[in-house]
Length: 471
Ligand SMILES: CC(C)[C@H](C(=O)O)[C@@H](O)C(=O)O
Ligand code: SF4
Image (cartoon, rainbow, N blue to C red; front, side):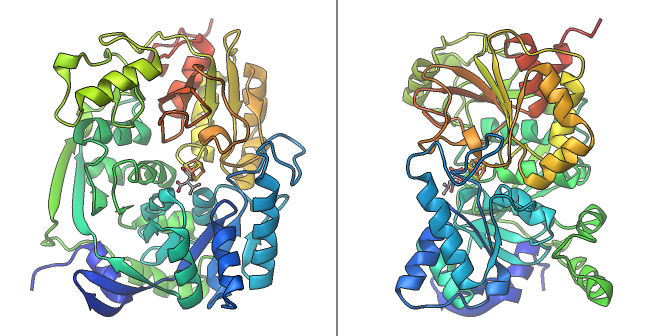
């Protein structure tokens, strides 16, 4: 018998019934919800007089439409935001699920708080009506985004009908260079293999460079698997994963912990496991990246120019290229490094964890944001915010001229609330640069928190390694 992939092991352990035609009925261990889509699912269930089958395995937070201004209340900048908040709160309390409400020190972006509390664990199946649920595969779980109707089904039955994805392994050999981050690796993958590159696949990231990433960086890498069109992403749990999870609020303790770790050690792909697709990346080929266009695949190393029509890679269509240039107000062949920016944003489920804020603070310390640049930092969770404040990181951000906010999705995603202005150029640590993603007409450039911080200081898109030294 040939070996099995880690995905296959988790799939088989959760397979209740083979429904034929490549579809399985899968047991669902955890459901995460947020107020933008979760309340809809909970309320729809209520209307059908159906209960949540396993309330102890269901967790809801407030992140998407909440304001992030200091001293916030249920009131939101988004006109209908308060309704999402109150509807989710009422439904969550009625269902008896865990709720991390506004004001709760555990509140935060759903994909940030789940690992933080040890809700996601290696080998579990976890779903959430949100596309970036793939982030949580970084802990060795099978975690994927679903729709609201599927969420209702999972809540009512603890099962889901799932079309089995194909498997892909991306092996990243060697070591990432100094100043090259997991975000740069994610953007490199997208630029090279295209935003449809992993369509229909669950992507296992492996290799020396992936093993070397800490858990928060692994979360960043897996986060952008949805931009890669993957079903989900996965990184096998290892000693770092166990160390990260031990002692977290929902992680097992005592003998149950030891038994769990023994089990988790088996959730790796066997040496002779076959994947449907294998990709190989050399870490030495990866440089700090920035997106220039309106798709995450339209990304280039910071020292390169926007591709010309005659230099387009196989994954780039000429029409999309022309439209993106027009929207972004760029000429083909233009240098991206050095472009003047209007705003800088550090936040989102991609890059708003403590390690992200620490690395940005290392760049900001002793420096000042360029005149005219609106700079905002939104910690990914209330716990990240508190931990950062305990280290004085908030003071560094504030002294540099950044706003320091309450936790939430904030301007990662314009949901009718606060936004950047039309045609404003924003350097952002988020994951999506679609047209109007951060506000109607806003021009988003995706990059690592380091690059965002360095660019905020220079007032121009800047490679953090090129920032003028402090006097
Ligand atoms: C609102 C929500 C459903 C959406 C998603 O699924 O990803 C949001 O989180 C996003 O990032 O666009
Ligand atoms: S931070 Fe952005 S990408 Fe992440 S869940 Fe919120 S809106 Fe979606």
